[in-house]
Image 1: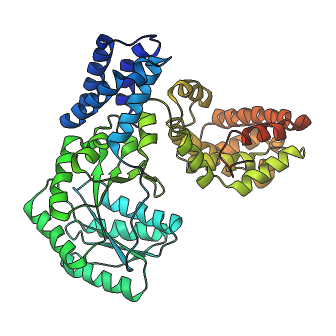
Image 2 (image 1 turned 90 degrees about the vertical axis):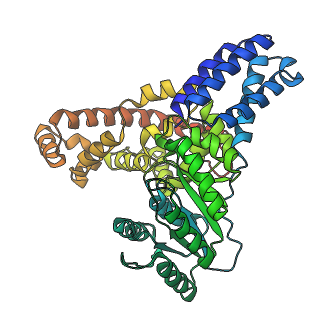
Image 3 (image 1 turned 135 degrees about the horizontal axis):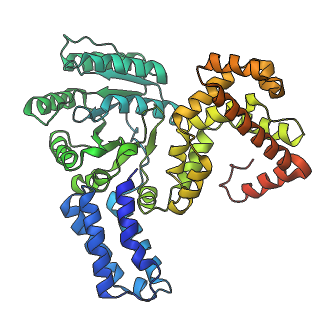
Length: 454
């Protein structure tokens, strides 16, 4: 996320980091590079000017020039101004209204509205404990209705069916009546998109807004769309009076221009940010954390929250107890660990949240633990018998050939996995010996947020 922008800003700010004194000249030179980095990232020109002017005013002030470490103080100013540029931290949707609360999602075709509707439904069900109904009025793309129905089943939401020959307004009215009669808390309305803003699309969303009276009107924007995204946001705001923005595909955007522009240009808060394809890849927008990631400081708080949400703590505690009592770490335990890593988006997703100076070493240690490798390793373990998982020492050459054939991999891959497992098993035994594991876990607990101890 924001890789190109992070790299350019790091280069621009590096020259100032070790400076004992800042001058008008070196500040001006750094800000020139920062300006170019932001423009290359497709940040809107007025936004770039507002940002650099604010940084310059503060950089020449007492808080930076009189600081014991002016370079670091300057970077802190850049971080604070980036945070301010993106607005306030999101607290989610405003659901303080008579139920069913209608949330309307609008945007251009391909921005990720339907996927975001499914993600938002899961977020409401899991985080807010709401009963959610999904409905699509995209009769121009019948696959969108089927896609939303599939997503509803995946996340445990209700779905109001629709046919391609029906009028969007009739579909929405029927769904609202269904949501009322069946006591749904929230109705998510997925509207049709177009490749470009046109009068027909705007008339349709206006008519829906007028009849259905959605409490929240969200603009779904592809973070890779750059200036087009900002222009579309302004057009939709004029038609609907938007209440917020969902920024999608942030994991695939190396530039980050839309994230930095859309709040400033539209005046509407970014509420959520999509960080992947899976239904749980939706985060509340936290500008301070995004700014930290852009500047290579990492986002350890989000990483800790992700671990708390997605790691099976009961299994983790059982594993820690098992090892501390002298029992062996086996291949079934390894499979659990690999599956948990997959659920968290793989190693790349975790590394993205680490500070830049830690990423290189962590990436080297992680090796080639990508999504494909994780799937193959899990497949190899699944091809073993329960007894083989408990007793890896039983796996002789004949068994290895059977396992490789069952998993659809080459024989050397099975050997590599078993070798890695042996090294992990030895490490676990060393940690458990003499209570080292307990001491390490106790030490970690002091460095983690409350409630995240072992």
